Length: 106
Image 1 (spheres, rainbow, N blue to C red):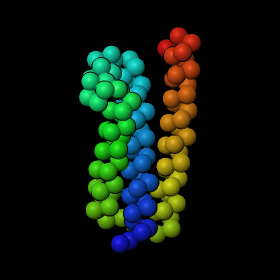
Image 2 (cartoon, rainbow, N blue to C red; image 1 turned 90 degrees about the vertical axis):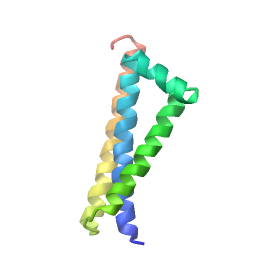
Image 3 (tube, helix red, strand yellow; image 1 turned 30 degrees about the vertical axis):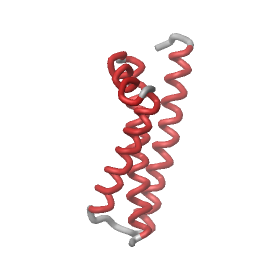
Image 4 (cartoon, rainbow, N blue to C red; image 1 turned 180 degrees about the horizontal axis):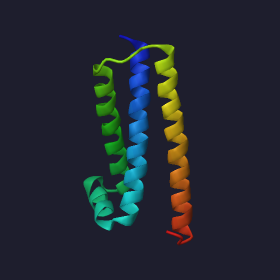
């Protein structure tokens, strides 16, 4: 198995999964039927978001692993850079959203 390709695929899949989790979290706060559906799906909306984020990760990782890509150090650095960026942006987005939401700014 090509470990470099697996790491690159995993980094991009994690980035997409982070984006999904951030988007669905904010969307569900503004759209009550979505939050209700997520809660009904598994018993709690956070559990459902986690299940779907995990499924997104697995599907995207498989897709990225199947398709050809460069396995160079540059590709590895780029994939991990994208993951780092999505992690920071997702953290900032949720922090700002829930801080504003708590203080009734949004």
